[in-house]
Length: 191
Image 1 (cartoon, rainbow, N blue to C red):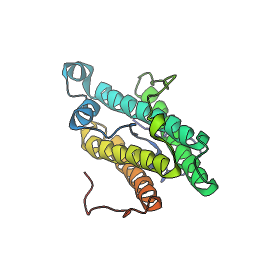
Image 2: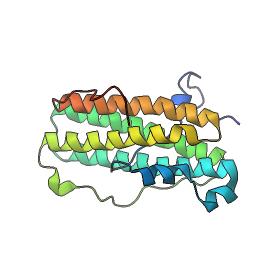
Image 3: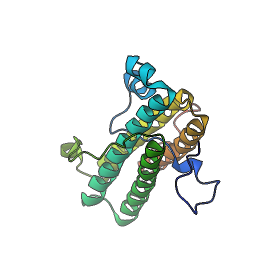
Image 4: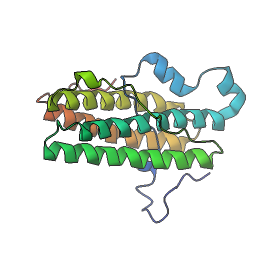
């Protein structure tokens, strides 16, 4: 089954735009297990249903990331180049979400929708550094989610796409850490 969603896009870019996203919070082992869909329902749904559940969880996280970056952009706390970077990252998350929704439909699922409201820590966002720190935590959570999800897909094309997006999220995280004056790559291994 082909998951090439966006016609006219170079084939080398298509897998990169396919998978999973991130959450507003760092993901715990339980959240990664949820992404895996390791329960009786997943067993009943079969492999395709499990992949759809993982993709829908990712889609929900991407939609949350889009909203979070909008919050940062609208906060009035970001200097122009930082706001432009935030909007660039938001655009990449939007591309991920659009492609995820398409993949879910191709697998016969129904894509999740964005929430009307997200529970972001707005009271703690008082400076540009606060917004950057919040975004860095989002991206760190995305890295952890991708890392946990890569081996879980029955469809190996989805695993490849997840690994590709993992790289994108890791770059976001490194850039945000660097903007905060922190070492962009805090260790030799991602966990």
